[in-house]
Amino acid sequence: MAFVPVPRSSVADHVFAQLRDAIVSGRYRPDDPLPGERELAAAFAVNRHAVREALRRLQQLGLLRVSQGGATRVLDWRVHAGLDLALSLAQSGDVLPVDTLVRDMMEMRACIGVDAARLCAERADPDRRRTVTRAVEAYAALAPDLPAMGEANIVLWRHIVDGSGNTAYLLAFNSLAAGAVAVGDVPPERRAAELLDVAGHRRLGAAVAEGRGDDAAAQAHALLTASLTTPTSPPGRQCRA
Image 1 (cartoon, one colour):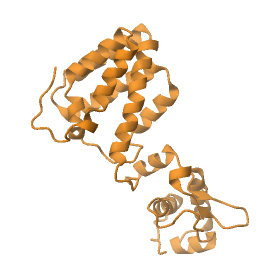
Image 2: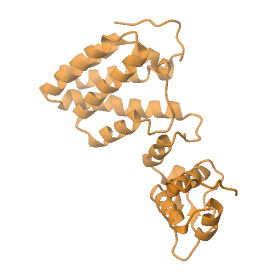
Image 3: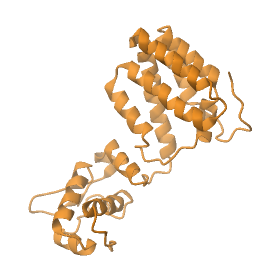
Image 4: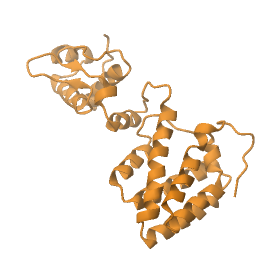
């Protein structure tokens, strides 16, 4: 397999990125052996230290199994990798080679958001409840500017997820908000049915403020699944306030 020689700056990063992409794209299959360090160093025109550092990072991502004295073999990323692989790809502008990844990300977002809304309604202190209410109104005031509403929506959901008291949900939310699922940019138009439902967001905020966990979960579900069940390009931009 031919590799592209890399610039002298951050050579380990370039080696890492090219090998990562070769594995994730399927050019290297699970259980395939990688060339040895000496061969890789020659192919990339770098020193063995850079190759060794790149292999270490690939092993940490769950893409390689490094055996002392044996061959370094490729692992199946669908079995061994975590969201840190997606973060690595997002930072370099690459995406996972999965046709349904936008849908998959939005389904994951909905699952987390529904339970986070319920927990926020049940656990949040009065200050957090007031913060959620203010964030809803700040969001509503931006309608029908979809890009601005999309940014405000992230702020609103950060308050809700933080108010849930669930650290795992918060870390997953941070990854999603940072684009770490490596789906590229999801245009606000893809979520228009959700974003333009100002009345639904106000109902969600009221349920959180009043401590109605089941109602908060139901409203979050209606909002977060709207883009999964409605056309992606609705005629016009009508705001339901």
